[in-house]
Image (cartoon, rainbow, N blue to C red):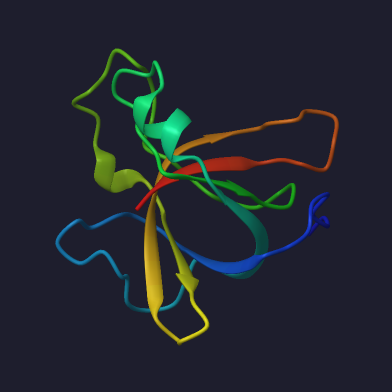
Length: 121
């Protein structure tokens, strides 16, 4: 897996599918112990121009990381949101903090800063 072009400030586990009734997944992650850089982006994520896409954090992961969203079109608000991944960060107290993967894009093409995931907490 490629290195991050920004300082790592978090290690995440990625689980397949999201379950709003049980936000902290159980079992083994699909992708474990991935280095990342998380940044809060409440203003642009919650109050931006995207009609159905709202997020609270931006997560930069190494190129080649298998992370998935449920987004297929701005015109499809009835999509199956449970198909998205859940990213879990374990904080310094040992608490699991789940994030729903709202949107994944290959940002910063041609650089190691891809993929980029927009997450909601």
